[in-house]
Image (cartoon, rainbow, N blue to C red; front, side):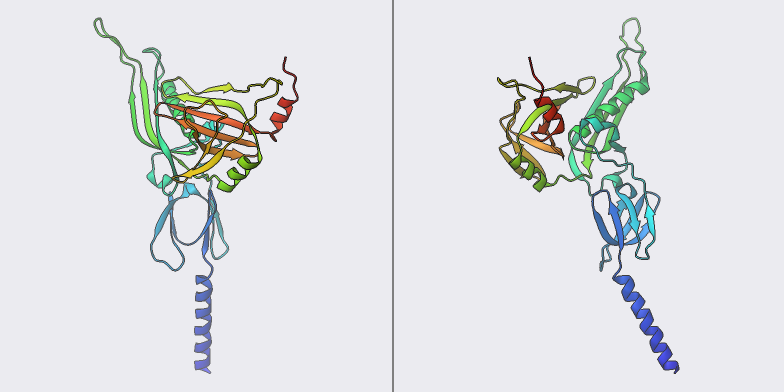
Length: 297
């Protein structure tokens, strides 16, 4: 009888162990989810292993929205990393100095921002905030929603003397843009293949300018209807999507896709000093339908 009891308990223990091994924890990331075994939930990061592996990985809590443990218990996190869909969302760009926050994210390019006061009485904080806004704007225009700041330079107002001119406050940021958002290649290809486009707005940021510029780019044809054009080709380079078109006044034909949404597409042209976004709407866009119905005199 005792032997039977011991065998029964051993069977139950093995069963529970097997059950635990086949029911992993689930990390819900900002983009998708991942089945893992959570080892530790710390103040700023989460340590985990993949099923049937022993290597311990670390991920920032900012990249995780919640954990559903194998037991059924849930732990929810409020991430400061938000979706950014172009220049209009630049204030949502998350700034970090912690390299753990950008581990595993998609690299979007080098960023640089400089702001200088107008006079030696300029507010140091206002100039710093202007430099930070320019950095966020450049990040948003490159498709990034996270910026890792690598270097910061700041000087205060320096009053001059009889033979020496003064200099106003200045702040300089340099960093790297990253994104948690992935653009679906098939969605872009489907839109390009089935729609024509209208160049609605141009967003332009010169690193030497005060702030980004937004201009309405709508042009009309001889029939007084908005000019439409097609995108010729979608190509993929280094994990990024590009399109080719002759319908835009660009210096290069390869324009990077930084955002796609219902009936709208944002493309980027960039060099060392200037970042340009072309905001396109399709022939099915609600605004375009209203625009096309107007009479242009």
